[in-house]
Length: 118
Image (cartoon, rainbow, N blue to C red; front, side, top):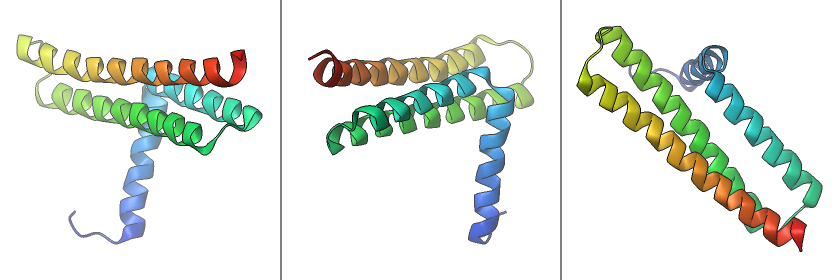
């Protein structure tokens, strides 16, 4: 599967996004949150730095969700039984998504305080 043409690699990536969207409610929720951030940005038209910060945060949260989904699916396939080490791996991946989500929320609140409340 290495060294595939670009269009095939793009197809694999789009299939992964589609699978995560179909299978993971948390990914759908994060996509909805990113869409709402885009709508707020389009409505308030803040400085470009806010666009960059908020869109970067949205992208990182969505990427973390995809990594978490990939890890969970791989682990469940390779070792379907419960195991303390597997639980730690899954919990850490979920924790990474949580930390990025909280960080993104903090940046969004800072944006709102500077651009909406004032």
